Amino acid sequence: MATGIEPSPQAGATGVQDASRAAIPARHLRTDRWWLAPAVTAAGLLAFIVYSTWRAFANADYYHAPYVSPFYSPCLAQNCETMHGGPNWELFGSWWGLSPALLILIFPLGFRLTCYYYRKAYYRGFWASPPACAVAEPHKKYTGETRFPLILQNIHRYFFYFAILVAGVLTYDTALAFRDEHYNWGHMGLGTVVFLVNIALIWAYTLSCHSCRHVVGGRLRHFSKHPVRYRLWGWVGKLNERHMLLAWSSLISVALADFYVFLLATGAFDDPRFF
Image (cartoon, rainbow, N blue to C red):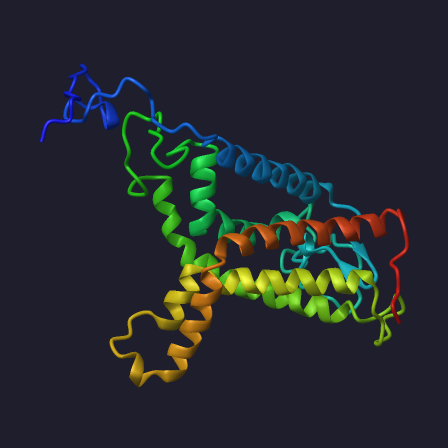
């Protein structure tokens, strides 16, 4: 059927400009502000990258009894501030002279970098691959995640296991947030609420992961023979529907939890107590 648009061969052209594709002079036919979503995404991710980099290398103001920043827990080096009763494992001993946050952030960072949603977010926001639906990417060829370094995205499922461990440690830290500055139980302050909200969002985001959904319900031929796994798969599936919202919410909450501890540690204000 004739469309009125004839192919226009271009020497060396690839992708949407290939000779086999319809020749459309305009880069795209969208009239809305399609660039807004990737621009906001890039700005949000860049803001978190700048903030987390600053805090990770600061190596200070990350502990105020009974709270410890989620960026610095568990502590794997000997040069940590004293965290009475907290997870100080000192696996790297005294030779590690840099910020102890650099030893632990690789795991939650790796989990988020390889996450299916975050891939979409930064592929579009930073690499314009593609920048938006029905908008051609500026790259001459597309290899997907079949070559180095993007083929490393396939290790996402392994980072998921580490993310479970980190979430477990942060859950323990949240339990310790119910102590006062003298490490007596029965305390509840604003920081306790901040940590409760943060760990709830971290668990929701972690469990909404596509890899978690596969671990729970993958490789099953008959759900009827595995009712427990089917029920769990259904629950994870409901979380997975909100994976993008949980990804952003948990990203913001973990930064806010760290910033709250920073404000307490620098003496900006005292933690308001409820009881």
